[in-house]
Length: 346
Image (cartoon, rainbow, N blue to C red; front, side):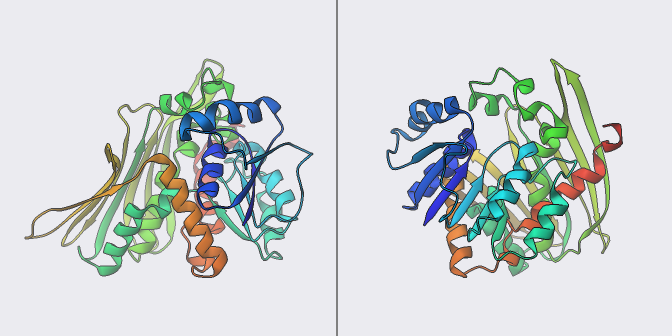
C-alpha cells in the first residue's frame, strides 16, 4: 500500500507513523520546508523514539502525483477542500480528509460533492474516535439492546487547548494558526467536533432517526488577535422526537471526554483516557452490578485503529456507507455547524 500525506504537522506525523506501523510506503508533502525538517528532526523522533528513514519527504509541487492507494490530507481546514478536489483527480482507492471536514462556511463542498458522484474513491473524514475499540464496544452493547430503549444521549469533549499547543510548540497561541479562528475551522465547535460525531454515531446505533432540530449557543471570544468560540453547546432533536446534548470547549482542565447513554433499563458510559492506560466503558443494567471494562491504548493507537479500518474498507470487508467515517457523516457534522454558527456576521 502506498500512502501520500499532505501536511507535516502534528496530525501528519500521527498518520505517517500509523501507516508505517501497517508496513505501508509513506510519502509526506508540505509547502513549508521547515515543517518537513521539523518532522524529521523533532516531532517524529520525539514521539516515536526514532526517525523512520523509509518515509519520503517532498516539498509541495515536487511530489509524485500518481500511483498512491491512499491520500491523506492533514492540512488546516480552510485549505483542505481545494486540495481534496485535486487529490480526487489522482483516483486513489481511499481519500482521508482530516476533521473537521472543512470550515463552517463550506467552501468548495458543493463542487467536491458533485465530483465525488463520478468517482470510485472512498472518501472518509478523520473522526478517529469513531473506530476506537472502546466506541465499538458501546455500539455492540447498543445492538444487543442490553439497557433497553435509549432515552437520551449526552456527549462532552471539554479539553483545554493547552494540550494542542503543547503538541505544536512552534505555535505561540491560538492566533498563530487556524485554531484561533472559527471561520477557518478552529475554535471549540470545529476542533472538538468529535463530540458531535460521536453523538451522531451513538444515535444511529441506537436506532434513532436523523436530526431535524438543533439549538446551539457559542461563547465567542475576540482576544489576542484571535476570533473563536471557547465553548459550544448543542441541543439536538431527531425526527422521532429523541433529544440529546453535546458540549465542546477549549477551556476545561483536566480534560473531560465523556458520553452517557441512558436507557429505560440502565445506562452506558464511555470515558476517553479515563485511566492512565486508556479508555473506560462501564454499564449497569437495572438490578445488576456495575460492569467496567478498560481498553488499553496510547494516542498513536487511535491512528493505528484508523489504518486497520481503512484496510478493511479497501479490502471490501466493510461497506463504505456503513463506516462511521464515511464522507456523508462528516459532512452532516459540518452542516450542523454551518447552520448554527453566526455565519451572517461574516
